Picture 1 (cartoon, rainbow, N blue to C red):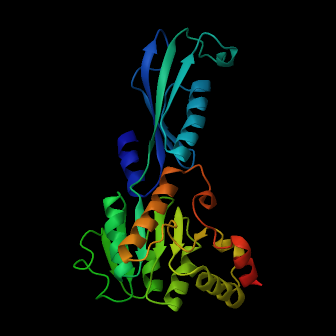
Picture 2 (cartoon, rainbow, N blue to C red):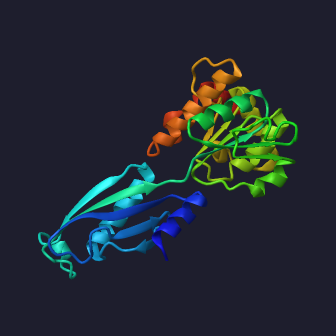
Length: 279
């Protein structure tokens, strides 16, 4: 299997991977300069950088690199440590560069109103690929969202199976009403999206959650990662200001992958007011 073909395939599927390359060699090593190994999210590999303990340490570093999305340099001296007594004591040294390969982040926006238009525009400028979904064709179309990669018009439940949601997907629920928000949220909490937010006050959000819990049996735990009210608290009022606050929150989540979402934004269950409303 060609490493580069597999790298492109994984990226198109929205899956992370890490590419390890031997960038410097001194002396004798069980591989060669420029040798490469691709590590997938599931831990499987393509290619090799020499096997043994070197490869095991590179594999561990690759897992960290995929999590942090920050590259890492590794150095090995194959003549110093008894840890390499499995045939890798060649007396040489090598340096390995491990880099993350992450898919393009996708902003999946439900609703085609004024706020959604502004979010799509700002998110596109910030480097997100936007996809807009609405149950009205007049609100989800190429003319209304020329910057969007895709637009879908139709019943939400019919569109859900068409959407590829991965750990690089950011879901924003901004539909035209309470009931439609609930329809989307019911599905969204079952996905592995990196970010999930819904428009509306905390009181409104908690009422939606309570209904899904009490009438449909969903656990409260399913909603713990929901960001609501959505966006950073900057006093936003206009659709454009709201878009800036939401996309800023998405960027915070994207650029701080080691931090839990609750450290970057707001748990919908946070605070005494929320706990009181849930009683």
